[in-house]
Image (cartoon, rainbow, N blue to C red):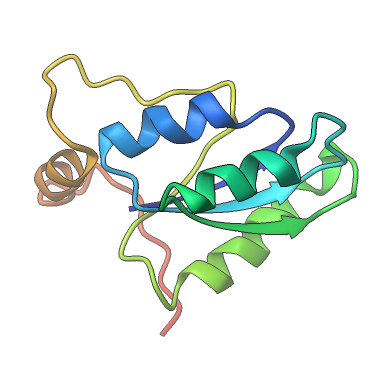
Length: 116
């Protein structure tokens, strides 16, 4: 499971989603002024698989950034989530994201975009 996100603040969000089963992050840095580059380096040294991409365009260009991320992630990720850093997956049943995606995709509840 991978996540693409435009960011300004990051550390708690990455650590939380790692506990939920996310294995890789594609971070689109949208003019951060909070030392995001340093935070990413610290997380990477803690074995979090994070790729940072500078994306200085305003919020209206978010769709372009997510499209760019979908192309990059398609080579390495089975599932990609597109969420903001103020959004958190919540799993009251304590299931992992992998289990939820596997279970829900059997019934067509998960959207899929394929590039073959």
